[in-house]
Amino acid sequence: MAERNKHLYSLLSHPAVYLAVQRLFRSEATQSRLLELLDLRAGERILDVGCGPATFLRRLPADVAYIGFEPNPAYVAQARAEFGTRGEFHVGYFDEAAAQTIPAVDAVLAKAVLHHMSDDEANALFNIAAKVLKPGGRVVSVDPAYIENQNSISRFIISRDRGRNVRSPEAYEALARTAFLEVAGSVVSRTFPPYDYCVMAARKPHVPQ
Image 1 (cartoon, rainbow, N blue to C red):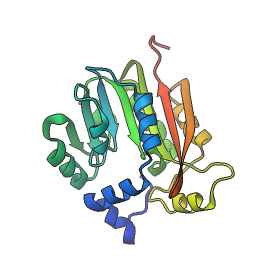
Image 2: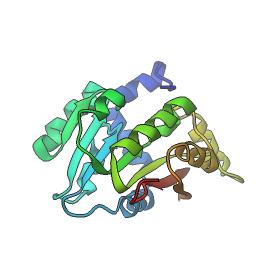
Image 3: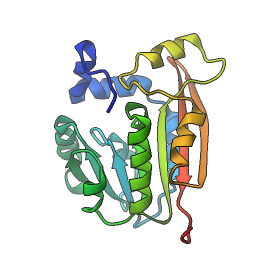
């Protein structure tokens, strides 16, 4: 994982600091778009990769099964304290070994994950996601993005992100296409503070390719 962890960035490993920053930069339009693309139905199962303290779980219907993986044990402890048995929360990276431990899922959420990964790591994640998804399942992601004619303040803030691999929307889509044929991304921008996100969805075919 390619990210900045020294000096002030190290404070983000503490759940309270992380949640405060998340509240500052959370975009309601982005959150709504994620829910729309996930399109979760009663009884379906979602895998949240890099779930942090699992705050997105608050937005999900109670009848959706939730599995989260997060390498920071402090974030997982926060999730377990808040949500208890509402979901499964695992400490660790979601990799091939972890994929063998979970049932097939209807959706995979990767929220602010890809820009922390190298191309090889992101390609591996999409390929593993394709294996754990049911036919017709979808991977939905959101990450900061560099776009054409970008607001200078947005570009400056994004360039200082903890993740070192912020990309253009086209570059994020190219990563997903290593494992999925149906990929679509869009840009969602907020005005204060200025910030640009790439929201992307990739879908597994209903029948084998």
